[in-house]
Image (cartoon, rainbow, N blue to C red):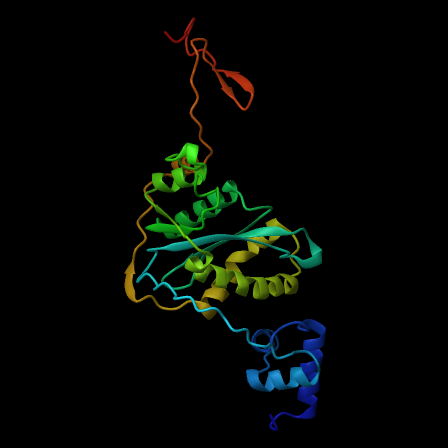
Length: 284
């Protein structure tokens, strides 16, 4: 602490006030090093920030004890998925949802995608990009949201659009019984709601399309900082054996309808008729 000149300290404090006012000491220190070439310990920075009323030590809450589920040993063996609604763009843009895919073995972010809301389509789009880039994981671990499970007892055994799609791809659906069971993705959401919000601000990004275009850069930096090595070096992902056209079909909305003799069917209160394949063609 005493090794730094008053001029250096003043410069650091000025940067904190101008660009990193609500950053914690750890993230502020990373940004000072990455963006400005300034290196000092987190502890020194914390003391300076407290002295300048830029940081308050947080009281540690007495956490309820939950036995953490042991990590799967292999990368790609289990992917935790979740949607995180939040004011990601603060007051610069609308509230939206971040779809998060995280590897259970390594805590690596495998997929991020902003969407207006947590919908089947948002998960389908995230999954499509995921399997194209990484291959097919063995299982997806989600909560019991209606996107993932039909919760109506009268429709027991039916599959949701998303679950039908992943089973077609050979992915096992697993549903968590408690939020604590998918703690890794929940903790990642908390980290993202701090770090990603601030990164979006620094990048001056305020819309979904721009954010999605930039997210791969963030994922690379995040995984370098937080991902760990798996217990087993085997990559459990399987090769994607579907063409782009086949994948698009699998990840589309699908519904069965009865075709009448006149080649008509009902869908969402509307009637549709197929064009005749040949002269006078009708079902017999």
